[in-house]
Image 1 (cartoon, rainbow, N blue to C red):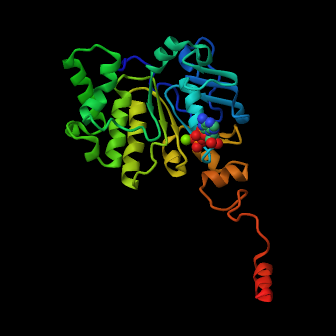
Image 2 (image 1 turned 90 degrees about the horizontal axis):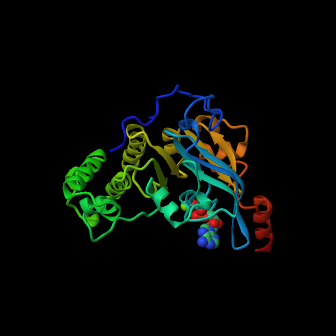
Image 3 (image 1 turned 60 degrees about the horizontal axis):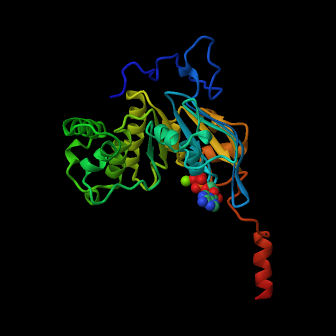
Length: 300
Ligand SMILES: Nc1ncnc2c1ncn2[C@@H]1O[C@H](COP(=O)(O)OP(=O)(O)O)[C@@H](O)[C@H]1O
Ligand SMILES: [Mg+2]
């Protein structure tokens, strides 16, 4: 059960400007004002190449924080640094006050139990029905009696609107339904932090809307903190409290989505407004078209 007394969203003043990702905590306030996740000056090198160099990133408790950026910029890598699947080459990664880079196996295991993850292509187990897929983490990590497992699974399936689908097999589900079952599974252990990698990929517009609504409602109803990696600019604009835009191994902009759409950097505006042309040109460099066509005619 989520503890009813955890600091939920909306418990503080609504800050619609969000000019800084995390305001400094007022003196005397509890640690709930501390960001849940903080990366400081992180570098990550693989094969002699820097994926990140000087990355600073924070996730405020209770919020939905989005991470955007072109393919291959390191969004999935960032999530793996947060879950401790990868260790930073330099800098610190702190989650719930723990220095992830210094945790041993047991420490990491303990920390990961507090996180729910919906990874890219995070497939369901095809041999198990919907109910057993959602029950799986409980069976792996707890010794709860069957009556309690059943109650937890049915509650989570109810939350994603699929209690009636408990006995379907994954092959019988639409893409959107499968994503919702995966969401139910990722919240069955009552995590504090939910991490989504490309949750909208491959969904039709209606299923996208459903998943978007679920991410928001799950975050707010359970008093969680969410990180959503996506390059779906429109969906993120509707969903996120704070958005980070990554490029070239760094954060190039952060703020509320509406602020990024009006950002001073034309490249940030181009990305956030989903424009095909701008500082990142539509055309690969080429000689002048007329000159080239004329050349052809002369040559031909
Ligand atoms: N295990 C690996 N070995 C070498 N390069 C990798 C590895 N994993 C990812 N990369 C490279 O790191 C970069 C970032 O990858 P990724 O985090 O998956 O990007 P994104 O999720 O933003 O598309 C890419 O250029 C990718 O080719
Ligand atoms: Mg990725």
